[in-house]
Length: 65
Image 1 (cartoon, one colour):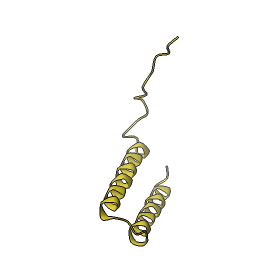
Image 2 (cartoon, one colour):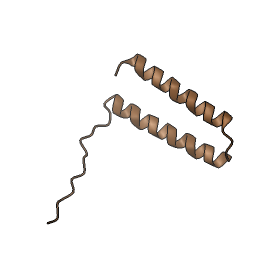
Image 3 (cartoon, rainbow, N blue to C red):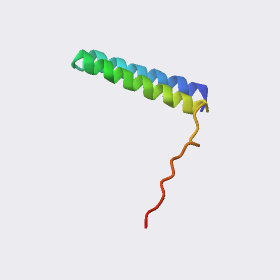
Image 4 (cartoon, rainbow, N blue to C red):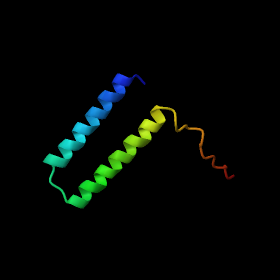
């Protein structure tokens, strides 16, 4: 993934999160949970994007029958 696409995506996510935090009325606890979920998702996405995490840990479920 090119660095410019990565930067633009992070900027768009940040602006959307800022808009939600400022213009959608909700409880402070819900806002903090939403912020934490978005940050965790972005960090995991970045780890996959830079190749630190891989899809090699696929779980195999045996078939029954």
